[in-house]
Image 1 (tube, one colour):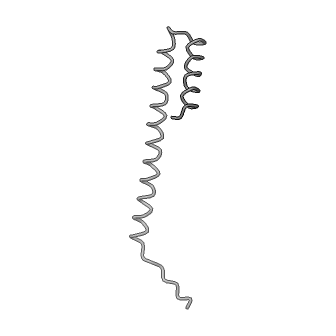
Image 2 (image 1 turned 135 degrees about the vertical axis):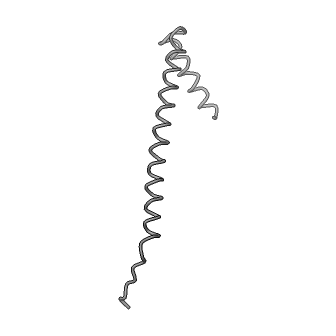
Image 3 (image 1 turned 90 degrees about the vertical axis):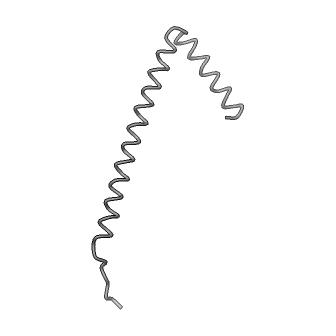
Length: 72
């Protein structure tokens, strides 16, 4: 992160600390972490399904006989 990134991060953290308060901030950060963890897990499963479908398509292409066009 460059300097601008750090200052933006500190500003947001300070703003959250003031608005939410020091007592509830860890609870909210924990909930946000769990949300992003489940979102990432869902994304990984989604990508795995697409890769499986792509792999099956490649296998079908290998099994099917090659069509020869006799348009010479």
